[in-house]
Image (cartoon, rainbow, N blue to C red):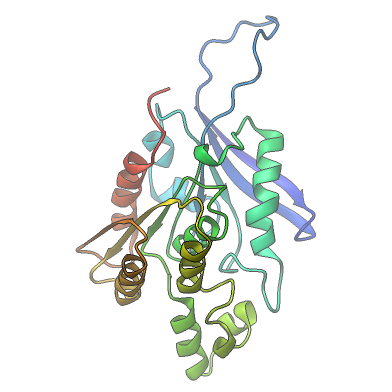
Length: 262
């Protein structure tokens, strides 16, 4: 396998950005041999970081490179700062960056599949929110999405922060009172997915019972269930911590449809 640290200029953000990419081993190559078939493209997992992390955290806190060995799966890990994967009210257009530019740039540089049936997204905490937001907004682009301890109820989080006189989420989403029902609200996005019909990505959701986001995760799962949106849901002992996410990313990888030994 190859682990590549990619630095590139983002035209969306107007600055240099970074992503880490894991690529499967292509097998033996013969020097000087002419290619006899079109370049193989790999199913791809976009793996998203949390609020206080960056594109390197999955490599530093888990054995993600070893976990995907033999799965015939590429992994793309972009950096989005503390953006909540949003086009920020006072900041950069990180939603456009992660939903449009990152896949286009990654496919330009690396042999990655563009088929919706071969693309997946997963993340933890803020990244779990981003993973579900991508899959629910663009269900034709992602076959599956996994959220680990996801910050899935940003309306509640933003309203609680606003009541406490804090401003970080206000700078990201704008007025908390206008957040419900807009394109950043996962509860609303799930309702829209059901109303319009069409493809539905498979969803995997896990949260620890001692996690400060546990009640939000239960509420979101109850919401999806009430709408008839099938979700593989699990919970267990644990807080908002890497010992849980290291174990759960292995389960999420085993759950992903369409992956298998290369």
